[in-house]
Image 1: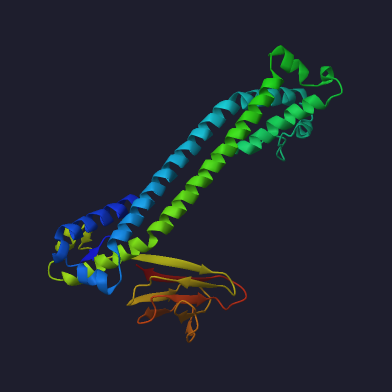
Image 2: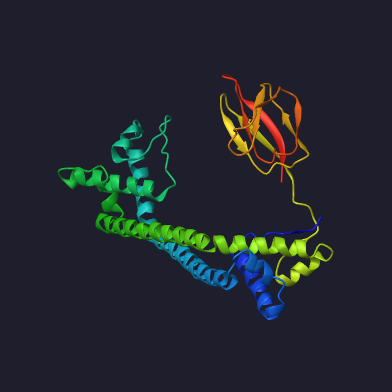
Length: 313
């Protein structure tokens, strides 16, 4: 069966729209889309303009995520020497507190149940340790009695520079988060801007497929990717906790629903689950026919999980 292979990426969708509109414009008054666009109140030119605006938002999203990644690198470069000195100082303290490594917790260092240091991976968690070590060192009435002073003076560690680098790296991390959030917002705005135009484009593709039933390859002239393969099918497994329900969409009609668990389950047809309830005993199968493209399955048991398998497309 011939079908249109829907594009996945935004750029592929825009390319499809551009090719389709170009063909429509070139054909002018002879375009086979004229009647369809009129009957369905589709302003193709306005859709293309919205697509162009979406492209601008997409470019902005790309630039913003690049700035976020750059800020991440700048942050890491700024903080790397601080973390290196933090680890070295902590290792010194660990040797110092050899018989009682739990004392390291007073310096903000995480210790597991076996007395081993458990360094975190997230940037902010590591910064918290560095700040805690510096704060603890500076908390002594006289720095001369700080247990860390010997290591600091012997290795020419500059606590002031470390503190400044922490402030700088934290500020850069804020920029990273802001640019990332801005990129997500721009992507969201792009998708909203192009949502209706793309739905219109998909409907145009569907119209062309019906128009050329004997020559489906002609659809490719309009920028659509026509393929002769069936929509891939997937056997989906759904696990239901006691007294829980789940909606399953895209079920292939003519397939079967199998209760693959030890608990009876029930299902209703439709998105809202307002139809008649059908019971499917454990270990049995039931045909998914008309009205079953979307169902809601339920595990009515109060104890034990239920397992359902169904083919979706």
